[in-house]
Image 1 (cartoon, helix red, strand yellow):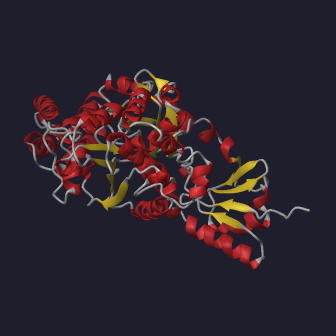
Image 2 (spheres, one colour):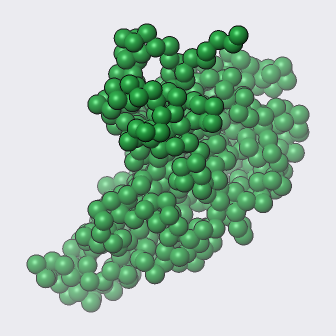
Image 3 (cartoon, rainbow, N blue to C red):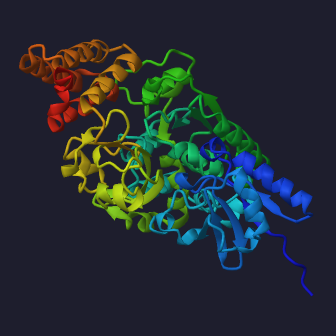
Length: 519
């Protein structure tokens, strides 16, 4: 006679779920179980990224995990009285089998395949779901073979520049030095983005695994995760994960008995947007003010502390394990053209169903906005969409059929960047948004180059004159010249891309630059 299995429940614990009351829900469920002597096993997993449904709890059933959401403390009694742990479909918050929710079902989750599924700090669950398969394979390969695998996969940096990861790694491998470094850019500062945070909070071992593989590939034995200062929960989870990985020989000296070593530390940033730029990040990591370095030399040759350095963002490095586990040929079959693999898009702003959507490159932007996002939360028509963070262009409806791939977006002077998608409804003044873009640059510029430092300040002034009707045509011409100077004369993307949202707003929404005259 077999024993009755203890019901299993999953309650998310990432930053967003916590901000929506997940801890209070977990506490109320625990109290209910204690008061009713109900044996219940609760796992605090990460979020699946269906944020309009958070806190979304799941229960394990014979058919699979069943979801309920969004759950508040006031819902707990009715859920538990109804026996939700058995998958009761009569409750109003019943969502069905989690994997059958269309928002999830229609995604292609590779990098995020474990996010929201496992206990983030359970090494057993990580390994049972394919974790460290890539590292095991890498330990049996030469450094050149690892780099070649990454290069052949077509993986490009997911931080914004989309530079081929294999070329960067090959440069570091080829550069002779006694010390090399792996640096992870986790200073996720783009508006509307949260993929890095989600992954670090919900599947931290995959980043550790990816950075370790990178170290084996280029001959680096030391790595740093440069973490956004505001991400304190991610810091807490990463610190615990690092200790667990090291205690189990997945990190540190003599990794899994291979004789190879890799050490990893987390360093917190100080809240400067410019430190998301790789050379400013390196300056900050060295204990200096975050200022952009002129290139060349490239960080791959003269990087952290003057040594050859691989610097990639969280998603780039966290994608490496699955490439080493399944092979380059498998990975490169996903996507279109030169945009191979998947990108985790993050829906934010005025959107009905905000959340993370990992898709292969190729579908149109409208697929994200409508099929996944469900239109605006306000119910008004979408007016503009900004993709790729605060330096991305504002896209009008005529461009929403543009395929989600790097080259197609470059063709309309737009960027995919880190995959942030911020939606604006028809009530938004795009002239004000253009002014915000210039003002953002003026505030966040490191000040090293004149086009960015002075150009952005003058840009705010010129936009104000245009909106006030002060010699409007002459000032539009002046703004255009100013933007051209910033694009071609700035040291980094901060000044070089700020004109993109400004000029796109002026081109596609010219009536919004006369709003103050009408008032």
